[in-house]
Image 1 (cartoon, rainbow, N blue to C red):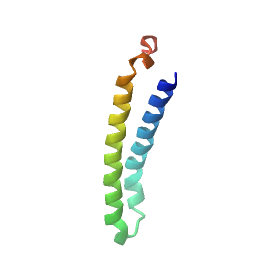
Image 2: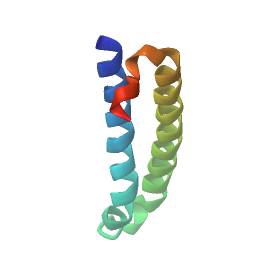
Image 3: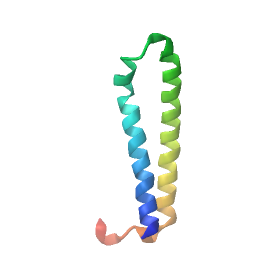
Image 4: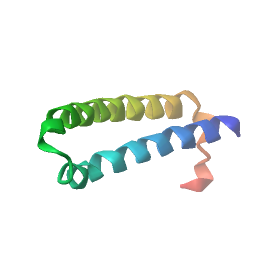
Length: 73
């Protein structure tokens, strides 16, 4: 069961990063123009981290097929 908890936590991280990426547009509207370039670089890093976290979550899921109960589908 601990493998399943680890898998769920990986997907929770992906979800949190996704919300940060989505809400970036609203955040940028209120940022001082001199800080915009830095904020767009931060957004680029968030997107890269999102991709890495997604790949990690998927690989973790595939490593532990027993954590995927066929009756849950």
